[in-house]
Image (cartoon, rainbow, N blue to C red; front, side, top):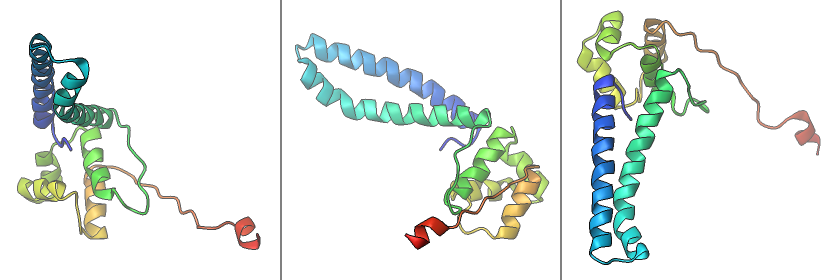
Length: 148
């Protein structure tokens, strides 16, 4: 997951370089006389890495636009906190300042996707980002399902 603008810029640059290298590699294989199926077998693993990087870049761009995935039973809550920081345009350094902690603490928390944080700490992060989180509870099994 791309967590800041520097990582994003590096990923975009790497994506361009990888695309160029991939195209050059494909042309060399074609010039060496390999058929389409053989080229595909050679290129697929490299292309898979390229596609993964492209998805990460696109995901970061969606977060910057404020587009979030829903979370289910708090799974993905840590990623949501990171996404909210990105969408608000707040750096890790600025969030650390708002929380009164060292920047390395925010970096470590995000690297671990806030795994194991307390509810109090989560609320402090949400407050520091000036975000209001609303939840909806859905009970499993409706009255119709219970009578059927």
